[in-house]
Image (cartoon, helix red, strand yellow):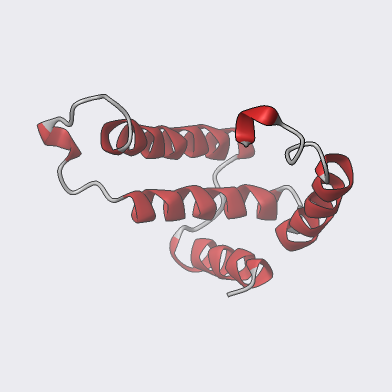
Length: 108
């Protein structure tokens, strides 16, 4: 799926089932909640924090998809073409960081 298709599917879902978009600030709060859920899984799975009973059934892939979904909704309502934005961002990073990481002794 292309990112533009994702944005279209999210928009269609919201228009069909969600009635309307939440406000951008509400969606920002929801995005932060979803990122927090990703963080919770990561620190328990890959970090030192112990799992809790309430962590059962939590799935990293599903939580990452939630983040992507809400991010797409925010992009839609703010008029951002994520596919174009990502293309431009990759070009910026490549021009800026082409040699930077290769010369970082910490990464060798």
